[in-house]
Image 1 (cartoon, rainbow, N blue to C red):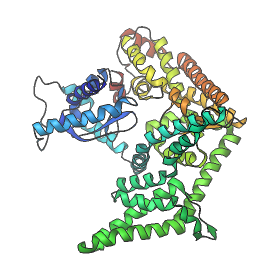
Image 2 (tube, helix red, strand yellow; image 1 turned 180 degrees about the vertical axis):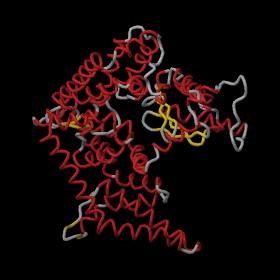
Image 3 (cartoon, helix red, strand yellow; image 1 turned 90 degrees about the vertical axis):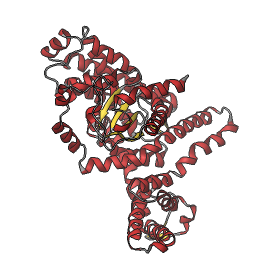
Image 4 (cartoon, rainbow, N blue to C red; image 1 turned 90 degrees about the horizontal axis):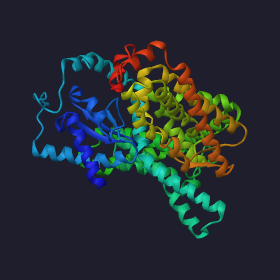
Length: 502
């Protein structure tokens, strides 16, 4: 039955994105189905958002359909199979034809004007800056690792609970091995994904990164110090794999074809491996140690102020795509200490967003369309999936997005203050947020106190986000416009964000 539901969702999505001929690529992350499109104008945004399984849509370098965690991993294979079958039945033309009259996808002149070529080009240029492209590629390396981080993190938390309570002592070693195995080799996976992302041979990137975690490096002296297995961690693996890609590309250019299979892999692993051993491991190790030291110092001394800044700015960082720069930092902290102290604070941004959405619901009793959107998106918001509320509610309205950030800042300040008072804790994995983060919490103060403080931070974020939005999130004109015409978009809303309100 579940498989039929996922197949039905895929079948409903396909014609609304222009059919199989309009699709150039298919991928997914934790919550979104990411589709490359030939012609963006063939997509029916309103019909997509009306599908029960769709939580929202986001346009970036790819067209992203928010399906939520779990669901996206099941719908994507069905969608890929459906596209493949359709192409086999009717081979794609060189370019997709405009939809015929009476077809499921109708593009009017007004829609084309709203999504004109100038706007699309401007948005594409805005999302294609060197910094954003670099961060996007960085995310492509680490995002595929998140499911394993979550699974191993939850198992590690369960193992810690059994250890502290003394229950099932015979299961502790087995769970420890299961939880720690992936983390002990995460550098290899980072090296593999880095080479794949930057056009090298993935297994060669993994082979070079494997040097970093090999126990035998303890016998090697570099810079007057013996190396430690794992020194440099994921940052060292990332740098070593990037170097391996460059060496491999150089070899492909200059090595004769007859010798390529022998010489290129050998030189790639040898050169990149030597540089990793006698340079990158030491440098990356120092950088990794500095990251851990700085994060600890920041929350120990900055406390509530640091939490306020981090919690308040996270939603804007997400909107700009700059939050992807935090992924290797989270991973480095998890590798060093077993958890990242930053994620519970950043998760407060989602709490402020939920509080703001509830306030919008209360302030607009006559806007049935928007209230329906909020009711359908709130469960996902409580579980840390914030895109439906961001793109469907707060961001198009403008002021509620700012007040949501205020709620996130308040929740972050609460968590930061507790860190400053000595109750430090973090998440054993990245990806989940909101209530979904509870199983991944870990701290020295004990699980009960850790859970209570995180829950307190969420409560503060919800409450402040609600109050700030209720009292300061609307002008009189906004309230009049939004309540006078149910489901309408305020005249002051930016045109580029209006489709999200539909």
